[in-house]
Length: 465
Ligand code: AMP
Ligand code: MG
Image 1: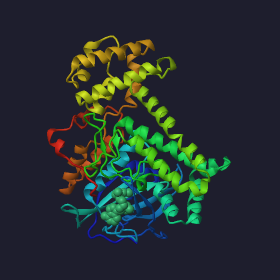
Image 2 (image 1 turned 90 degrees about the vertical axis):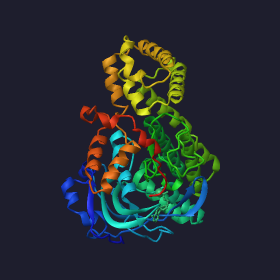
Image 3 (image 1 turned 45 degrees about the vertical axis):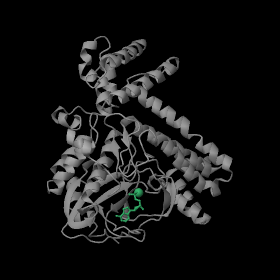
C-alpha cells in the first residue's frame, strides 16, 4: 500500500498521456489524492514486483520495486497500460531506501518520458507529477514527489534473472509464458518460442539503442534491471542528451568508469541481452540456440542506425554509395568531436544547407571552430546530395521530421526544477508543451533550442534521485 504524504499539490499533468486514458488533463488533476498515492482507486490491489539484476556489470542479487507500486491497468486504444506510482513509499523491496523520490528527479522523469514519446522513441509514459513538502534526505534535504507512470508492462530483463538465479525454473516459465502470451504471441509459431522471444527482445533492444544514439540520448544507468522486456526506455535517472559531441561523454556523474558512456551504449545493450539469454537458457535449451538469437543484435543495430543516419542527413541509402556513406558519417562524427559541436543544433541546421549555395551555410558553419575542415566535409556532402538529385526544400522537410529542434537539455530541466522548488510549476508545463512536438519550428520558443548557457557546464547529474 502507498504511504500517504501530507498536503499534496499538483505539479503537472501530461495532456497526451491523459488522453490515452480517455481523460482530460483536468479530470486527471482532479484526482490529486490518487496521483500522490493518498487514495487507492476502488478495487485496486496495489503490488510491488520483485526482480534482480546486474548493476554496472556486477551481479547485484535481489532488487525489486523499491519505490514503485503498481496500482492498476487501463484500457487504451493501443492496449492495456499498467499504472504505477513512483515514490509513494516503502515496499517489501525497498532494502535500505526510503521508498521516496524527490521533486527534482520526478520532474526529470516526467519531462523526459513525454519528450522521448514526442521524439517517437519507445518509452514508458508519465501521466503526472505531484509533490508534498515532506522532506526527503538525499545529498541535501529535498522534498517528496510521486510520478504516475504507464507502460504496457514494467517487466525487466532482471525479472527473468531473478528466477534463474533463485533456481526456480517453474516461476521463470510462468513469467516467460505470460510475456509471450501478452506481448509476443507471434513467437508461438516458432519451434522454440523461448529462443524466438530472446531473438525478438534482442532485436527490439538493438533498435531502441540505435534510436537513442540517433538523438544523442544517454540513459546513464543501463543495468539489466532497467532494461524493459518490451524494448522501451525505462527508469529515467541521470540521463542526458548529447550537447558538445563527445562519444566518450558520461552523463551519470556516479559512473566513473564510463561504462554507460554514449559510445558504449550499443555494446552494453548487447551485453544486457547476454544476461537475459543466460536467464532464459533453462527454457531455450542449448547455448547455441541462445547464441543464435543473440547474433541478431549487431545486424539489427547496424541496419537501424544506418537508416537513421541516412535520414538524418537527408540521404537515400543506396548500395552503390554504402561505403562512401560510411566514410561520410565517420568524417562527420570526427569533425563534430574535434570541434565540440552541439549534436542537436548540427543536425537541425544541416537541414538548411543549400546544395548550390554555400553562402547560406553560415549558421551551420558557425558551429565549427575549424571552418576549412567543415567546408571540406560539406563539399563531400553536397556531391553526395547531387549524386541522388536531392531537392533542397523536400530534403529539409524530411530532415526536420527526424532531427529534433528541441531536446530536454539538462539545463532546461534544471531551470524548470529550480522554479518548481520555489512553487512555480509553469516552466514544467511550458517545457512539456514544447517537447511534445520537438520537430516543429515553434519560432516563439527559439531560446529553448539554444546552446546551453555557461552556468550549465557545472551541472552534474548523479544516481541520487
Ligand atoms: P535505479 O538504479 O534507480 O533504477 O534503482 C535500483 C534499485 O534501487 C531499484 O530496485 C529501485 O527500486 C531501488 N531504489 C532506488 N531508490 C530507492 C529508494 N529511494 N527507496 C527504495 N528503493 C529505491
Ligand atoms: Mg531501476
